[in-house]
Amino acid sequence: MSNTLLIVILFFLFLDFALERILDYLNAGRWSNRLPDALKGIYDEEKYRKSQDYSRVNMRFGILTSTFFFLLILGVLLAGGFGWLDQLVRQWTENPILMAMIFFAIIALVSDLLSTPFDIYDTFVIEERFGFNKTTPGTYLLDKLKGYLLAVLIGGALIAIFVWFYRVSGRLFWLYAWLFLTVFSVFMMMFYSTLIVPLFNKQTPLEDGPLRDAIEGFAQKVGFKLDNIFVIDGSKRSSRGNAYFSGLGPRKRIVLFDTLIHDHTTEELVAVLAHEVGHYKKKHTLKGMILSVFSSGVILYLLGLFINRPELSLALGGKESSFHLGILAFGLLYTPVTLILGLLGNHYSRKYEFEADAYAACHYAVVPLQEALKKLSVNNLSNLRPHPAYVFFHYSHPPLMERLDHLEKLKTP
Image (tube, rainbow, N blue to C red):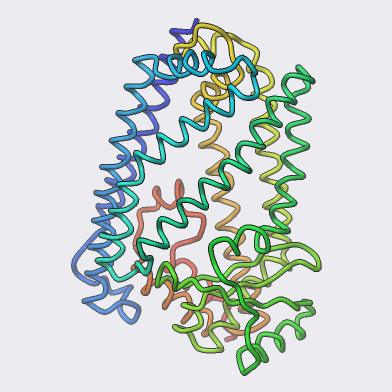
């Protein structure tokens, strides 16, 4: 039975790798060095060629990195590497909580050490070449150290709590884990910007002036209570612009990247804000949370059904059943369900983006939002002609041309 499970795991890995390469091939077929008529007025010839070069470089680099890690995981699975690591950890401790924490810590550390050279090349070569990178080696190293600290504190605590639930609650493990994860997710949604973000970025209240007046005027007009408007120093790491909404109730806040403020007019920035307010007004944050809670519930319920089966551990080369090997094997076997839930999440996310655009168009203005979306896409060298299949599998936001067409239809005749 364990050999059959290993074959199924390998089949899913091959299937996932092949699907990604097919999607890359289809997407590459949309590239052209000639500026399509539909993009004239958005891209100029030089900028368009640069965006195509950026897409090509990223695709080739993505194939290289994904192939490396695909072959690596295949080698580890066929050699029984995870089972060997399990036996090694058992020599250090017999405590199941410590075993799981050490097991996953070693995997995470090795994975990060192997991926770091690729990440450094991506950041300091590819992103630098195309004018995006603003990260210094010192900032990069400090971010790494802070990331390790958070992984130990938060990741280690979550693993310990989950193993403890498993040990004390048996078959109801999934239910207690689900309830705890839901509470933890809500807590992080409310306090992420005040607890985690300050470790990496500086957030300052938006200073008084025309932009703040315009934002507060719009918020008051649509009945959106907004006391917290912050600017984040995104330029510390990248030239890309962004804005996001976080928190719930009185802790909700709008965060604007300083790069976004630098590249856009006041009207365009208010239009972007109106889009973010639209997400809140349409209850997209709440719906997204419900979908996330549902997805985690499905995952944990299925995990609860199979975690006690020793075949999961044996399939990865383990000599005896263990919680940590069982979770790892389950995660690999769960790939098809993850894909389905990911497709479902992306579908609703794209739908919500259209709805938020419509809200901004109806309650503020169409043209400033269109211009803001164009600038964001051009400045980020986005691929404006992705293959529909690639969009279906990977895009959480609709492609620019679809959003512009949708907004054009909302213009008052």
